[in-house]
Image 1 (spheres, rainbow, N blue to C red):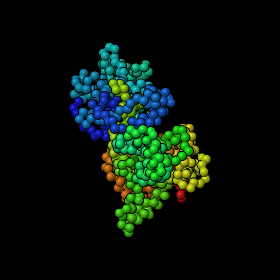
Image 2 (spheres, rainbow, N blue to C red):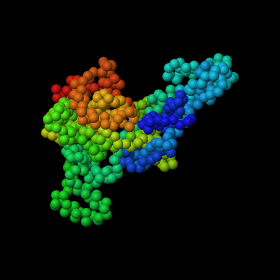
Image 3 (cartoon, one colour):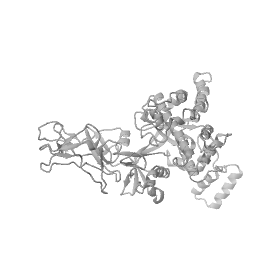
Image 4 (tube, one colour):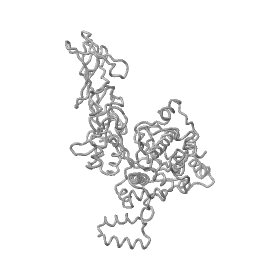
Length: 569
């Protein structure tokens, strides 16, 4: 096969190892990314934390191949693999089964003469055999006439493999359908068209990756997750969590890294404290266990996400003519739209550092934990692999009003305080009522995730329209414990950087007004409402864009009698 060109984003999301693809009229299997480059400047700790979370459903079902244990106990390293632009991707024909376009006789080669004399090019078999338990993919086992050694395919015109039949083209003896194909463990393999989701579903991971290890080190020296949590609870003052005085713990780590002995460090800290040169450190949040740890992790995601650039409404006002229509929009219309939409903030991040990639795949049902998770693993290095990329893109950070969220949760029957004097108090009340960061067992957390996720999808679908871009060009990253999410420009698609910035600077009030006042019914109602309140016609996004595989979505949490958006009506 000669070299062909594809966009980098198309390869990253559609040409993954062990995936089948349609190229130049044929079907091919991706063997590997040829001489793929590796990237070392990644936040491996945060990446492993996210991989543990993502693999959890498979670990619970006993179908993760030990992935969770390796991440959690053995601390197996993770390598990010990037496409080598000069070498590209190695493909091989698959399945290597063809049929005559005239008489449908099966052949083992794509070209050559046929007994029927037809000169037409042969078609390639679209069906493959796959195993849910081992992740294998094989050529389907085709019956052949014992007398003539030949077979002829009869295609039903559907994608159902068991409706395909064969007979002998020489004696017309019926040969039935595909014969059983066995996986390496003896399990019977399924038959389907090669592009079906059941044949290959990639499993993706997205984390906020520090723009540099120096930035990460600075944030960790400033107090890390505990400091980020306190900064977020205080309303994200300043440009980043690095603003303000260093904490005692952060300064202690910096001094220790310089090689000073413990006694000297404590003396210097005492001098700094007496001169009011350090902050005492993060105040007590009252959070414990898993909720505290996850809250700190999500706070660090936000801190990293806004570490390079961050624009707020106040910065839009600076430099704007006080008598201009634009100033009126920023001073009056933007805050009104924000309030009516139940939001605390919308901020623009011009340099959003994101690592996106795929850590494995499944074959079979797409639900997490339903079939075996096949992870990418480099046996020579003894390391797990992520096929993806690191990029800086633009994003918006959207945060829901915690006081309003608390009121919404209370109206849904959850035990929260009747009134809150501040956003911080409301945040801590919500976090303090969550017993487990598990949307299957903890009802408050499940409602929070459903609200944040549904809000994110509705905003993304409307933002694509207002920005005039393709829907799949936007993706989400949720931080539900902090009632927020990032909407960022994905590396795939035809998104032109500047689209979110233009939306933020010119039409954000129109977007938020439509989010509240626009049509909330679904074109597929009443069926959609009766089956969960979310479908492809109203809230669903493409799988690469959605972090939860289009689960935990419901239009009723936003609109309707008990909807979040109706609380300020």
